[in-house]
Length: 187
Ligand SMILES: Cc1cc2nc3c(=O)[nH]c(=O)nc-3n(C[C@H](O)[C@H](O)[C@H](O)COP(=O)(O)O)c2cc1C
Image (cartoon, rainbow, N blue to C red):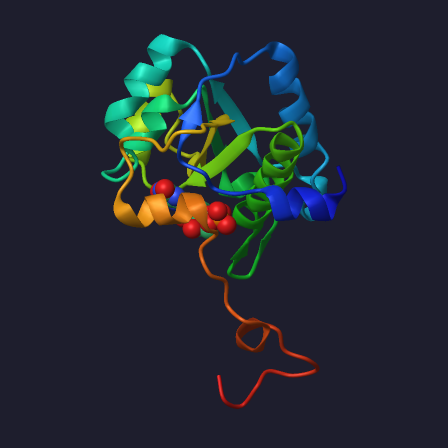
């Protein structure tokens, strides 16, 4: 699959079927994250692959309302980092940016493997930290929810989420975010 094909194919679907999470599959996704660029090659990302059914069950109370569809996840990947493990340049703390890059690489590889890999912010970092024993100094960026796209719509979805299963949410037109040579005066 070409990169552009993976970019086009990737969707944050919420209707998921369960799949087996093998060590090989985890390795494939981890390798994609491993090759992401990072400031000074600091590689600040740390990933927990949560696949044990009893651990996935424990994660349920950590999900925000509206994310009940995650109950069908086969795998939840916690993406985290510490600020001191990456470049600190003035007010720029690069661990956020670099974890975003690593997550994007991982998500595209999962897409290429025929999976859904859906990042979410709707969770309680405090609860996830307690469930998985994550130290306080790690910043939890996202949970990536992995499964296979189901043919049938998840019963947990709202009307809006059902619409998003069928059609990709609208994107900003180029004139709102692509600027040539200088920042526009009317923005
Ligand atoms: C940082 C981040 C947080 C997100 N949080 C949630 C979430 O909590 N729940 C959810 O259902 N989707 C969440 N999403 C998915 C977005 O809603 C989705 O990517 C967006 O609507 C565009 O749809 P598409 O990815 O299918 O193109 C999140 C995506 C990102 C990148």
